[in-house]
Image 1 (cartoon, rainbow, N blue to C red):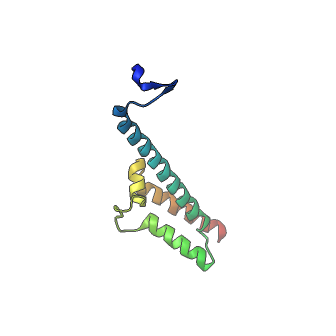
Image 2: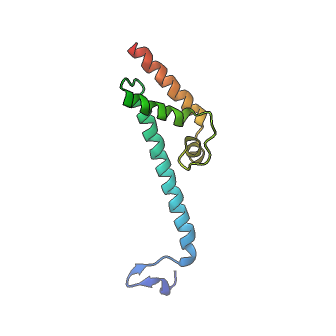
Image 3: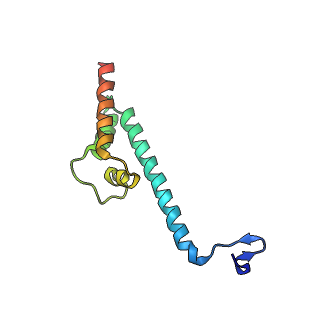
Length: 110
């Protein structure tokens, strides 16, 4: 790095590299956000799986629609399909896992 990029002992970024650096951080940040959204959705689904109150049943219905909707939801950036695509996860594998988990949960509480 040339002397022109050093200012009072602090190293500045070369403006030619900033675009690549910013895109990388945004992409990694988006992936972290998507992973957090997916984790929260799974935890909420599991929390409300045996919902009894109308409020919890409503939340479970929304969660199930997000995971299991037959419509292809490609437009919202944080749709289940988009998150799976970005994280390179198989959405059907996750769906099968959730259904299997829910079935076992019902068997244990029956």
